[in-house]
Length: 169
Ligand SMILES: [Zn+2]
Ligand SMILES: [Zn+2]
Image 1 (spheres, rainbow, N blue to C red):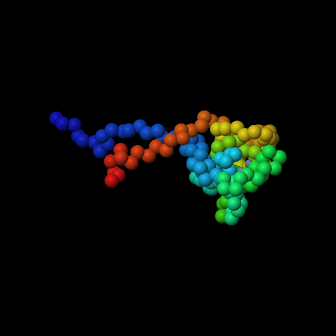
Image 2: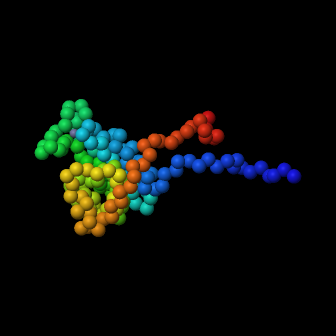
């Protein structure tokens, strides 16, 4: 007696990222919009597994970009760009979204100023995969009881295999 046909022939195990990898991957994607050649950084603010806002380091709206006219260096730092974390917080403020209790997924350990802004905005957890120089972030986060989770850099590959999806044309 033939076995009943099942709807699912074969379960193909995909490279499914876990939540932390997923949101960090989004942060990496956001960083592709960055305009300062000295650093490409991305930030995603997440609450209850939902993205509140994203940010990357770029110029003030309407201003010219580092990659077009060069960096604006003060004390060995480029000060032209608004940092990714700051842009994510500011986008939330502009649109009236609360970020208190959120997790910040950032490609790099925040700088001192961004760390202070994240703490003040009520961010409770920071997930990063890379360090950043000259920062008091670790110290400030510890004082404010903000948890820092440093994880492996997620896969930098976007896995979208259109030809293998049977419902695709
Ligand atoms: Zn720059
Ligand atoms: Zn910063």
